[in-house]
Each structure stands twice: as structure tokens, then as C-alpha cells.
Image (cartoon, rainbow, N blue to C red):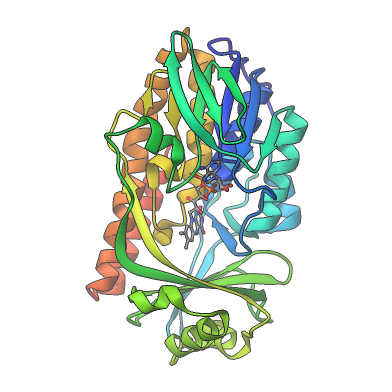
Amino acid sequence: MTEKARITSIGSALIVGGGIGGMAAAIDLATRGVAVELIDIDPEWRVYGAGITITGPTLRAYHRLGLVEDIAREGALVSGSRMFLFNGTHLRDLEEPPLEEGLPATGGIMRPLLHKIMQQRVSEAGASVRLGLTVEALTNRAGGVDVSFSDGTTGRYDLVIGADSIRSRVRELAFPHMGEAVRTGQGCWRVAMAKPPSLEKGEMFFGHKYMVGITRCGVDRIYMWLLTPHEAAESRLTDQELLGEMKARLTGFGGNAGWVRDTMSGDDWINYRPLEAKIQPRPWSDGRIVLLGDAVHATTPHLASGAGMAVESALVLAEELARAASAEAGLAAYEERRYERCRDVVETSVAIGAAQLAGDPPDKIGGMMGGALHRLAGAF
Ligand SMILES: Cc1cc2nc3c(=O)[nH]c(=O)nc-3n(C[C@H](O)[C@H](O)[C@H](O)COP(=O)(O)OP(=O)(O)OC[C@H]3O[C@@H](n4cnc5c(N)ncnc54)[C@H](O)[C@@H]3O)c2cc1C
């Protein structure tokens, strides 16, 4: 990796939220010479056990962080994907060219392994980490932010970055013009389990009122997702009920989707989550407080790009802070570069979900996905 330009517009940063976006920001800012402190509300700094799909643009963003070799070792990087009718009839193979020379096209990894890789890099970059706390008060002062933490400690930082996800505390404290993410009417069922023997790369299943996809996440691991209309009762299901309800919704699916349905068991990680999204209105910073990731551009999984957008936002924030003469100029340039791209991802993802709910034909939905992924392949 080429050496990155040092940041002189700020000397210190507090990052609230040690998820994908917060860790990406910690790695890049600390590498560029900023004294980074990262906090997470979870005392054990865990992440749930699902897999995650890595699109070409997301892989390019991880490449800029120097993580691709680790992801290749712990996950699965592949070229192309396969399309099927829901009953298992093969439709066609999609060859997706890599976005950069020497980079695989797409991939997947289990979230806990991705977090482990990123946590290690945060520590190697020299960022300090405190766990089991959040922010209670943020006060913009000339040239910095005074912070009170929930453990009774206080601090002053040149910049505070809210990367604390969809229900962001930083957003609540400092951005009254923003609001909660909105439910889209769909829900996502996920199971993480052993790989079907014949599966080599990602698979998608069309032509059914529910949409299904499988992502390979390692030598012998996959996760499968299923998108359905959301019903309120589904949020209250026990683990055993989740298993039965997910299997029931997969009735009629063939190929590897059918294999997963018939093989999944109570030992596998199964989860249901109603989908929410919102592109928050500008401005995304106030004084020396700024937001990134789901806190400000929460999206649905339809383009599998939420994590990629969070990493890109972290990279752009660091790049603009390095380029700018002042923190304020860097924050303005960050927002200018990120708003339209993130708005496109959020609004197109929500529109694809709406098209699925309306029963629109697969060609229309495929066209919406293809168009967005083509736009995302452009520079960020
Ligand atoms: C069903 C589903 C499937 C998805 N699949 C994909 C996919 O395949 N590919 C993809 O690219 N994206 C996917 N996404 C989106 C992706 O997971 C998110 O966009 C991404 O994790 C956002 O990163 P983040 O850093 O903003 O938030 P997170 O990764 O959610 O991290 C937030 C962190 O902040 C911490 N935190 C929360 N509140 C506080 C607080 N008050 N104080 C301190 N810390 C706090 C949390 O403990 C957590 O560690 C999916 C999303 C959903 C809902």
C-alpha cells in the first residue's frame, strides 16, 4: 500500500461506535497520525453471527484499508455469481469483472471474523479503545469538542465522529434536524451454516414472491438471506419458532436454497430483522462533530452495500481531513463527496424493496440492481 498523507487539520479524534465504519475510520485516521480514541457501548465489543456480502466496490474500499489479504484468508473471494429460478432451474451466470487489477470481483465473510480482523488493525494502528460506555454530552467549543462520558469521565477532542449506527446517540445529541430511520415494510431472515456441497460462488433465486440469496463466506460456510413482507409478530419469535417460520417461507425453493431449507437446524445462527433505512438531511456535521455509516446513511441489504458505504465514508473523511487546511473545510468536503453517492444507495435499495413488495418482474428488479452497482463501480 502506498503511504497515506498525514493529517494536520486535527490532532485528536473521538470515534463513538466500534463497528465497521468506526473501525475503518480509526484505522485510517490513526495511520495518518491522528491520536484516536474509539469507544463502544458493548463491554465485549461483539458482533452478531451473520455473514456479510462484499460487493466489488466494498472490496475496493477494504483494499484501500489494506484488509483484502486477511479477508481472503478468513472469508471467500470469488468471481461472478449464479442466477436461478426459485425452483432451482439455472438461469444464467454473471461474470463480474474486478474493479481494479489484481482484485477479486466479490466475496463474503462471517461478521465476527471481519470484526476480529478490523479490531486487530485498530490496535496495530495505535488507536486506544474503551469499552462499555457511551457519550452523555457533547459541547462544541472553538477548535474542539468537550465530551462527557457515561462512566463519569470527560475529555476534549479536536473532532468527534458518530459511527454509532442506526439509533445513533451522537445524532440524537447533536443533530436535531435529523430523525429515526423508517421501516420499509420488508423483513430479512438470515441463516448462517455449513456450505451446500455443490455451491461455489454466490447464488440468487428469482421468480418467487420472496427473494433469496446465498453468499459464500469461507471454505465451508455460507449465509442465506430471505426477504419477505414484514409482519409485526415475526419480531417476537423464539429461536425455535424462527427456524420453523423460515423453513415454511422457503417452501417450493429448489437447488441450494432447498438444500439449506432442508438442512438448517436449531444449531445454526438464525435471525429475523425488519428493514429500516434513511438518508439523513444535510448538514452531516455541526462544528467539530460529524456522522458516518448507518448513523447518517442507513440502508437495506438490497444492494449489499451498507458496510461498503460506511468504509468508503471513513476513507473519504480521512482523505479530506488530510487534504484540507482546516477541520471545517475537511468536513464540508467529506459531506460534498459522500451525500449523493449514499443517497443513491439508500433510495435505490428502498426502491428495489418496494418493487419486490409490488411483485414487479425480475427483469425490472435486476435492472435496478445492475444499474446501481454499475454507478457504484465509479470512483468514490
Ligand atoms: C439484514 C441486514 C443485512 C445486511 N447485509 C449487508 C451485506 O451483506 N453487505 C453490506 O455491505 N452491508 C450489509 N448490511 C448493512 C451493514 O451491516 C451496515 O451498513 C454496517 O454495519 C454499518 O456500519 P456502522 O459502522 O455504521 O454500524 P455498525 O457496524 O452497526 O456498528 C455500530 C457500532 O456502534 C456501537 N454503538 C451503538 N450505539 C452506541 C452508543 N450509543 N455508544 C457507543 N457505541 C455504540 C455498536 O455496539 C457497534 O459496535 C446489512 C444490514 C442489514 C440490516
